[in-house]
Amino acid sequence: MKTDEPQAVLPPEHLAIADASEFYSPRLASEWPHDPEMARALLAEAGYPDGFDGAMLSTAQYGMLPSRAEVCQAYLSMIGVSVTLNLPEWTTRTLEVTIAASLIATGVPLGPMGRSGRMAGRTRWFR
Image (cartoon, rainbow, N blue to C red; front, side, top):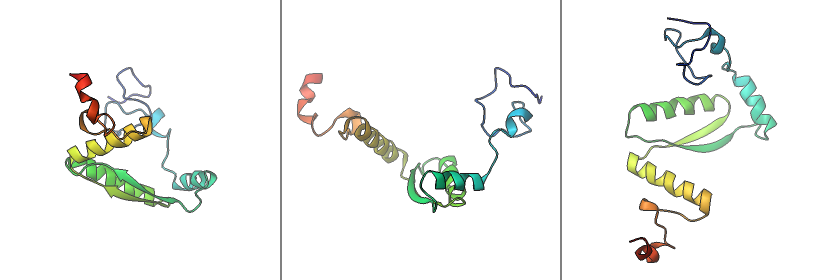
């Protein structure tokens, strides 16, 4: 069933939803059009007129995730953003995210189970 108005069961707005889906809404279909020229203009306005290089962390373990990363990489390349994919196995990826998040939040690289080099000698406090 197609509808012109969103209903309570719809996923968040602006997601790509196929027009064959019962959750499709023509009103929302054109909310965020594919516009590489506008994306390039926004990059230039942000100080990156020639794009930039970056890295994307995903995982190779589950087939849909590296495929999505490759699609993102291709679309970003269209606007001048060169992305190197980092696709480790799931456990390595999870550890990399944990360490990066802890560095951003606390300045201390936390490892598995939330322990850091600073805290390793104090683990007796948590028994």
